[in-house]
Amino acid sequence: MIDFENDVTASLQVLRTGGLILYPTDTIWGIGCDATDEAAVKKVFDLKQRPEAKSLVILLADVRDLLKYVAHPSPDIADMIAGFDRPTTVIYEGALDLAPNVINSDGTVAIRIVQDTFCRHLIKRLRKPLVSTSANISGQPSPASFRDVDAAIKEGVDYVVNYRQEDTTPAEPSRIIKLLKDGSVQVIR
Image (cartoon, rainbow, N blue to C red; front, side, top):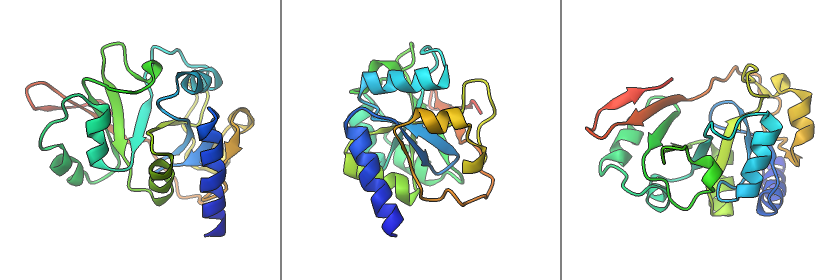
């Protein structure tokens, strides 16, 4: 647990100064930054060599935090999220108080409520949402474990989390769904 606490503390120092971290999430290893810091978000796009037109996933620790970052979340969203059988990113309309470059051009934002202990501690202590995008150069395969993360990504971030580096359980990206105006759900991935 000492590594865990050291990693949280070091990550917070980097995130609070606009830096990037490489960290384990509830799915695959991700590149993270403060999702309200436009300059930090730009660094993520630059590192991934990804066009800014593509939006990024945002992680929150609690479903009630959606009220801060989404204009009109569905009244039954907490029940819906509680019913998910695996990590699921939901695309919401009406993004609020996030860096403009994490919001899709149509005003939507992709948000996942994480159950992962490390991510939850980090988000709660940062008191801001985290960007989470796969730790790869755009167009390359997503890393199934830490050992699959490209050296350019490891060298391009300001801090690499030690916690769970030895975990070789293959991981997959989250499911992505979009809530439509009529209340139906569209599966994106």
